Length: 164
Image (cartoon, rainbow, N blue to C red):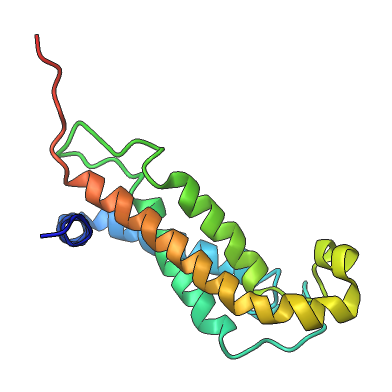
């Protein structure tokens, strides 16, 4: 069995062992992520933010995948009462943070992003940035999935105890 399939197996075992509290945190985290990423990018329609370029069809599934994976990653930080060890923050935490930030840029309006406008201008944002956004969405989902996989598989790993 390869290390990748072992990681998936351990992640599945960890998910099956989650308590209702962890699932609740995952759900609340997914909802919060959907709002925090979706509202300012106007993928989730709201009166506070607008968008110059219409939402693309792929923005909705990208936001949904981001929200679910971010909720799972967040829930891995909930301490399980049955274990005294928990995954170290370095076990995928940075990947999750980078993935979350990338998702914001991936689903955002290409000409509403001030940084992109300053660097590329409006025509450059539409010509160069907009075609890259689906790739950013895939990269974001990949980083969040890897973070979730690392954090989940470390939840079921046997802790090494110090010898006397």
